[in-house]
Structure formats: structure tokens, C-alpha cells
Image (cartoon, each protein chain N blue to C red):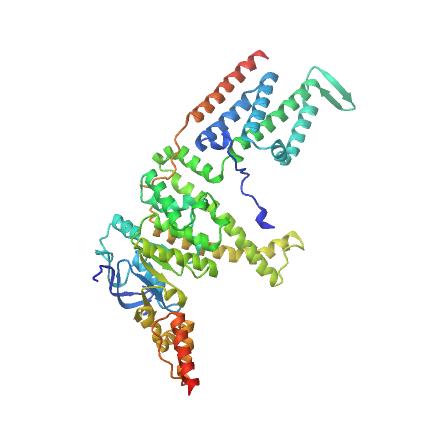
Length: 293
Length: 268
């Protein structure tokens, strides 16, 4: 299948404190990365590996020091970009941040969801339609007249997502959007993300610390020191337990167990997939094989 | 404890007053103030009183709640009436003792003053603060003041600032609570000592609160930018209230009452 590349990052470098005279170590260092339309990419990396900087580069909150970024064919690193183009890019690349409290603007849920479409200058009837359908998508229709502080963290984050969906973006970047939530809130948000990806074909870039969330993605990108460390399917990535650990991350628990057992000299086959059942199966097979002798 | 702070005194409901356009309500409040100050004769005062009571009934807010709201001004009422009773000099002396002379005019005037102040307070709060949510109020003000944009008054920015302030009050209260608990756990004492030492004890609460507010502001600004915020130009609104028949009708009723009051003044 030949899918269109939605985001193309070409040899991008970005460093924060420009003008201090000294050479700062760049947050993003000669990074090249293409992301297909409609894919679900998880971005992993320890703190300071450049994940969040990458997200901010994609919708022009930050501009790269050097290199090119193309979004849907538009060169967003073009210095002559008009304000209208900037708005158009931001409309197409939605961003959901870590702290749900610091993203909500209005005192009523539906007013907040309407904030984005209102900024786009849409017709009131169209805004109303989009707000209703966005709240429907995140399953928060019953709460549209509530005020945000009456909601739980997961619910607030779903409202923040609804606020982005109402702008009808082609891609949504989740910048550690699950980091501040409790397990049930995290599940609510992950379910919503998966649904958006599968049902509405929205490209998802999910920056996270949680390996079990990354396992749900089509593709996992591990960043280290502002560049790609590993890039591949979750299975291919997590197979490299040594490399994952060198990047300061944990591999998923089931792989961890097998890795440790193998290191101790047990001859266990690598499982065929990341599924817990498959991992359990290879351990069980090994157990049966060894106890038979 | 700190969570009990209610913002404004909005009582949610679905009465006629709740449903009126906020712009109209602001205009009505101004009209109501005019009505109260136009009343000069006893008869017109009675009408103002009847009108105020009618407003309370229409709003669906209980009399008890409304009367409770008068508590803070009881002192003002007492002082005003005392001043009027003891210091007004008239023709009709009704009570005299030592250096105190009380005239009928003074008593009369005191009663009218008390009526005026209470109806003013009740009327404006029932019309505006009790029946309009802060967000509606901000919205109404923005629309009402929209013509001022022509002379470069940043009406939209002010209204957005108000909205964000209202939005963050509960969040910041929660945060204050959290910081206070954290400081208490470290042995801070907010409840004993002189006023000065108690104020000083608040400094370790205020500093982290300020810092976190700035951080929040920064994150919110980024999030707003990501949601295509670019000032008030070219922005539309989801809810554009159109004036309904009932809005026009209510304004007419108020104007009619205004006229009646002026006429009643002549009959006195």
C-alpha cells in the first residue's frame, strides 16, 4: 500500500537558547522523519530527548533553526508564510497538552469546545453542529452545560480533545496527554485516541512515557538526544531491549521478563508478538520443554 | 473550607428573568435604577415597592434568600434612618426629649430612604447578579460595548480576560488549598498570632501560587495559539442571541413604569 506522507521532516535542527554566544546542545539534532497519513505513531524518549520540542515544531509554535518541514505538501518552514497559512497549519495539526486544566478557556464545556471553531470564523450553525458531534465523539454530550472544574481529569482531557476535533484537524499531536491522569482517565483518553484514528482516519502522534500505550500504535519512534534511536513497529522496537534500556526507558513488562530470563541463560524463544498471551506461551513452552527432560 | 466560596451570587433557574438577553438585562438594570430615583411621592414609592416584589416573584428566588442578602447593608440602613430621623427639622414635632427633637417629616423621609435603598439593592441583584451567570454577563457586556471598538477600546480582549479569570478561579482556589496543606504539613501556622504574623505566614503560599499561575498562563497561551486564536478579528460566536419579543416587551414594561412613576409624582 502506498500511502501519502502527511508529515515530512527533513534534517531539522532546533536549539532553544539562541544568541547566548555559546553553543547550546540542540533539542532536535538533524532529525529526519516521515509520517504517513492516517497512521498512529507513538513517540517515546526520556525527559529532554526532544519529544515535546518536536511536537511544537509541527504547528509552528517553534520554528526550526535549520532544516525543512512539510505538512500535507506545504513547506511550513517557509519564512514568507502568511498569517493565514499559519492558521491553516494549526487548524490541521491539533495539539493536546499534558495538563487539562491549562487548556480549557471557557467556563462551560460546550463554550470551550466552540473556542477553536469560533477562532476559525465559522458560521454559528456550523459551530453548533461541530461542537455537538465533537462532544458525541468523545462521549461527553451529557456534560455540555457543565463547568470544567466539576469534571475529572480524564473527562477534562476528553473535553480538550473535543475542542481540537471540532476544528476538524487531519492530525492530532498528544503531548504527554495521559501523563497527569489516573489509570481510568488514561484508559478513557486512549480509547478516544484509538477511535479517532480508526474511525475518522486522523493521523495520531502520541508522545508518552507509558510503554503499554505505545504498544497500541502502528509505529513507535524512540528519540534520544534530539534524534531517532529506533523506529519501527512496536514489536521491532521493543525487541531491542538493550537499546530501549540505553535510552533510559523501560520495555513492556512481558518483554522485560523474557529478556531477564534469557540473560540468565534460559533458552527462551522470542515471542511472535507483543501480546501478553504470546509472551506467556513462549515461557510456558520453555517450562514444559525443560521440565520434560 | 476554602472551596465554599461562591462566585458572584448566581442562582441557576429557568425563570423569565433568567431567559432574558443579558444585554437587555443590563439596560433594564439601568432603567430600574432610574425608576427608583425618579420616585418622589409616597404613591410612586409604593409602586416601586410593588414592582420590586413582583420582580422577586418572577425570578423564582425565595424571599428568604433575597432578604438574607440585605444583611450586609443593615448597618447602612440604620445609620441612614438615624441621621434622617434625628437631624431633619420640619414643622410637625411628634417627639421631644432633652436635646432630641423628632419631626414627622424626618420619620417619613427615613422610611422612604430605607425603601429606596432596599429596593435598589434587591432590584439590581434580582435583575442582574442573581439571574445572570457570570459568563452571560461578560458576554452581554462585550456585545453591549461592541460599538466602542470603533474608538479602539479592546472590548473583546477585556471580555476574554474576564472569561479566563472566571474560568481559573476554581482552579486557583484548589491550588491554594493544596499549597496551604503542603505548608501546614511542614509546620506553617496560618491561624494563630497577630494579624501581621498571619499575613507573613501567607507569603510562602502566595509565592508558589504566583509562580504556578505564570506557568499556567504560559501553557494556556500556547494551547490557545494551537487552537488558532488570533485576537478578536474574524472571530465568530457559537451563540449569537437574537432579541426576542419578550425582551422588547420587558423593556417596554419598564419604560411604562418609568412614565407612571413620573405621573404619580405629580399627584402627591
